[in-house]
Image (cartoon, rainbow, N blue to C red; front, side, top):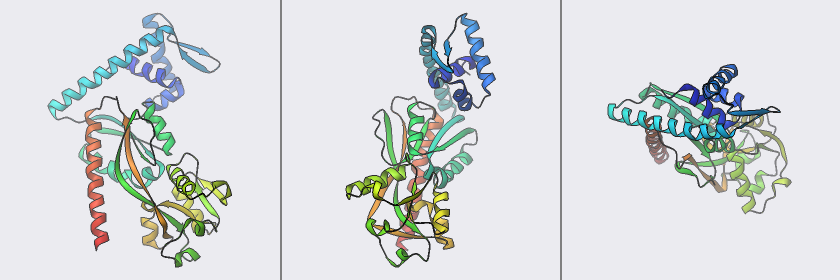
Length: 308
């Protein structure tokens, strides 16, 4: 394994925070501080300036970071090549998923992958789309799976799933008498929304903007950071919402909520994103291929079920 001190140093240098580095490395903050102190003692110089609860790299720290990044990258490349030759797939794999995907979509993929590759230690982060893209940009995670658009040209974006947003309302609601509902009809009722930064909200805002609907004029009575919270509020009769149809499978089966298609429909994609220039470990390559196959199989089953 590459020198642990260098790995800890590189993480602190990237995040410029001992606390965030400790969280990313699953270490205590004192343990991170100890590793940095050891490295500074080895070089007999400070690598970080610490002022007003902020840290910055010294000139020497910047030099060490440039070499540490190269050393860690080369180690990962060597490890990957050896495991390719031996057929061994193991090690950590850090994945991030936006909220809807993390709660309803990714568990099936991760569970199946983990059964096939038990030696890969997956760490899953769930946040809204903006948060996951930020983690990918900062190399805090290897792969992100998000809903909605991705505008960073330094990231590879690969569509793996096609999703649809539907109106969610109580089963005895007036909208359930319609086969489809337009946006103006939906907004006649109190509306429960996802939070800002959510991929679902961004797609919905774009949809409204194209139809000259000002979000400021929408009667948003509540905002939540999770589809489950929204569905609880809708079940309680507090309003209606618009969510991914992927979040509604159990609710529709139990007849606890109703889903009404929009006219015209809101279609979107789920995408895998990762840095364009990042060296890909074997475990990462296998996960990407596994996710593609899993989604293709699931999509085929969905098509067959619709045909029936």
